[in-house]
Image (cartoon, rainbow, N blue to C red):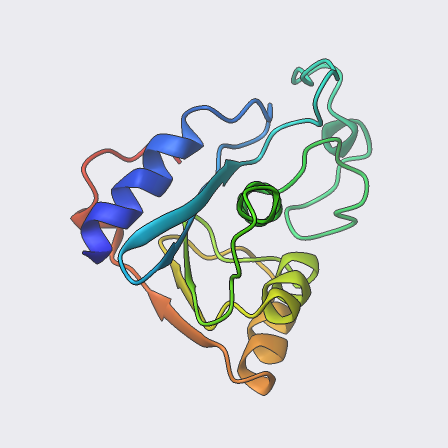
Amino acid sequence: MDIKFMNMALDESKKANCAKGKVGAVIVLNDKVLGKGNNSVPKNCKPCTIDSCLRKKYKLKSGERQELCKAVHAEQNAILNSLKKGYDLNNSTIYVTKSPCMVCAKIIINVGIKKVIYANKYPDDEAFKVLKEAGIITEYFEINKIKDVIM
């Protein structure tokens, strides 16, 4: 089932409108998909281009100054989409094509997600530390198991 849900996260990543990278997330409980999300700008906002990207403008590395990005992270969008449908996320699993940043890690903890399965590592070791401290299981998913790689 992990392959199925990671493939769904990968498919979701293809819908992202972030100019710097594409990330997808799927939240699952008892083999039921509760919500999906990708890293995209908020509703009714114009997508960034490489030329208009604030992260590029300020020469920020991945993992630095996340607030200087117009896009909402895939995990955040998946959580918001699940909650809008009225789902309780306690004890669920989130599949992401890139591991969570610190901001997403804190949100994951507080909504009750208990497991994070990720395909690529985001450069934020502090996020892993806080997830571990909160008792959240993190599991690396070998990228070569998924059908198509766009990252």
